Length: 217
Image (cartoon, rainbow, N blue to C red):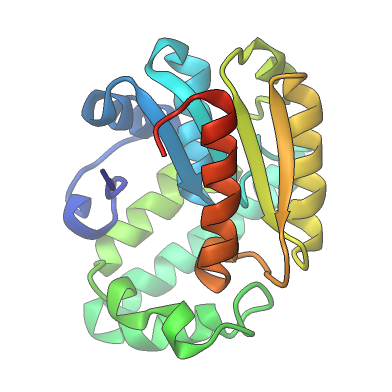
């Protein structure tokens, strides 16, 4: 099962006020399961695991973080996301292509091929939905949970692309903070969008993890 998070795709009209609310809705839809999330999806799945651990049988986090601990850093990120949200609202849906072209030209994604960038999938979103998601579920709004990661008892795999230096550090820290039930893996030859850049290698890592912990492949 794949799920569109609030503000995205088929859930574009779904409104939440916090990342925690988004996690609660995800748990209602997914029920007891192995959860895999990338970027915002990873942060949402992590929040679900902390709020409703009985629902999360195993957890795969890709390019994710447990939040920005420095208050000034969080405020800076909220301001940046607010600026992006305002740009989306000003341009509206007719300007989404131009918005995504600018987004994909940034340092995390500029190396992607057209197939990996998958513009068609991005354009199923709406400007209003994405703006709302940035304001309510952006990293700057996320309550840091580093000090709670040791509560997670389910098997956890933290994944990053080997060339994504920041998220390699974050994946390493996530696994260390969770403890012996967590592991960290790097997708060779990939950057931030590791699951799209090297899908076969990524899939092999996840399949190996699920086989090892007894989760559904």
